[in-house]
Length: 486
Figure 1 (cartoon, rainbow, N blue to C red):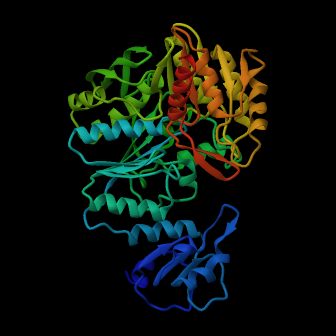
Figure 2: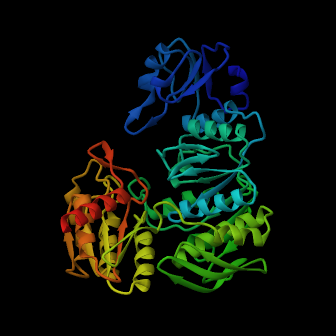
Figure 3: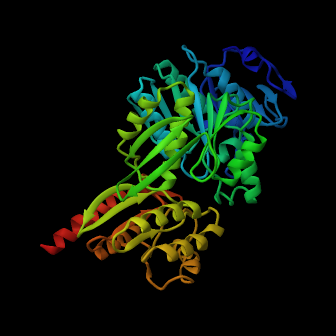
């Protein structure tokens, strides 16, 4: 694509040393530049992209998008916001051969992944080829790409959407994080539908206040961004969106008047059943995930599929056929009469939902293993500890992804809240040892919840990611325990 074609309609402050050429590659990492590249000098992660322009030029960049004039001879496109420009130009550059994929965006602190997989399951089973982009990675057809960010950078995002379209994918369900909205990664996408699940405390290491975090999430729900939106009336922020959005809005909820609601909700340790009403279409649902929060996720997914034109009975069959979501209230194994589950819950609200649900369904003791991520919102640590103390019969505090923090210091911060509620806990920093200790405690009727990492396959300590899976850790621990008992 010619540079002039690519730049058409872009809001540019100044262009210096303009030279026309055929743009063959876009890059935000100078190391990925090739001949005839357009390089974006992005600031982020304590790095100034302007410092890498010379490296980009050496590898073939013929033009650079910048926010200030630089001492280079190639074409300089000076803009107000490089991230926004990268998203707008990526959208134009990665134009698919076929019609663009219809994107369903999901916004919320919790429930995005589960809701996205329910939607994908429904669409696939109804003959609508569906891809997915989110916390568990990118999936479509026979393609799977491991995750890096909940919502990838605009270069990766629009390239992926192009590849999906070229492969015959009709819909893409995408988790839309607050970071992605704030950093304009998905700028240019007009969503077929936007879903709002909830807004609770998270990411206050990035957003200064909860109000700012909430405002960013709410900002995307406009008629300029989507055909319609699906909003949770049981969430306070959801009710704010309903009152203020300019977009056509449909609602779902368990506790407040809504277009979609559920009655006769019954849950056990392995699933739930309920009657769902979508616009007076009455459906009996038998669902493999337990807890009212998952009933809510199911309603969100079912509502959007109904509004996309799918038949109610087809939706019910698809939901009832679903076997679960990897790392979300996922049953792993039974040991000594106790059931072991893993879950991604890593926020106060997420931990509260899963512990409260399983506490009500557990015949004997509820044991929990969890930690908190490093270099993230510190204020939620003691809150999560307090919640564990209120609902769990025994807690094992351990490492999550300490990143560049001292893991044991994180554990001590969680303990501040935990010890106000109970003395029934232990601190074991090594996560495998912590999981093993908890499994050893299991007796008939107990439930063990291992929280925080879900389906993650790594642990990050001092900038190094090493292979680690809670699921594999459980399997290894049980294997070792059985060998010791022989």
